[in-house]
Length: 216
Image 1 (cartoon, helix red, strand yellow):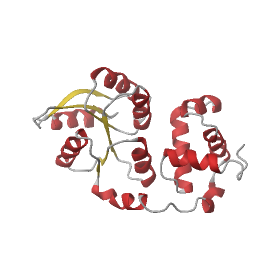
Image 2: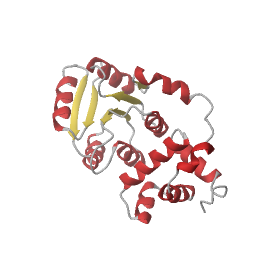
Image 3: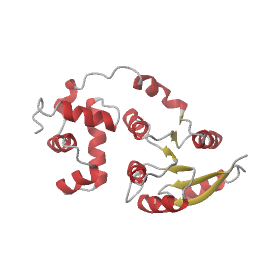
Image 4: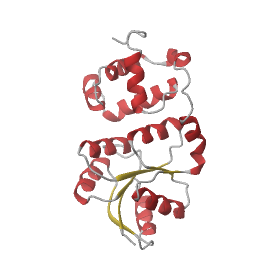
């Protein structure tokens, strides 16, 4: 039975400590590191090279999405799981589009979390069954973006324009003098308002509609 090296990151110390203790009750799982900070998680994961990284979404310094992107840029080969309270369809789809293998809600039974880690370690996907309807929607034809476009704010319009110019989150944050977390929040809100599923779909939408909506 191959040992699975696990790294966990969550900004709630009590939850983090409890999760580590519970995971280590399984003989196949070995927690090789833990962090309460997103930036620290990036450094630790790069050094420790776990098989699976279990990440919270709302960490300080860098959220779960930013952690995954940073490690992907470093070409780290590992599997990611988001363990979160966020049960929104757009967030799940953004995670899947980013290549995250597992998406688990925090109210999930611990036995399910352990099983998910083992599956993801093998390169398989695991999504909390409660969110299964979203997976069905994901495979259906996307709805029209147009009806809700009027809900987009001026700031969101500017961000769409910069996305259409292939600017990264970091570059957009620098240009608008805001944090990367703020940009990520705006991107998420845009996706919700326009019923766009995933980061890649957002980029495609911004490029295709740049002239139509005067985003240039």
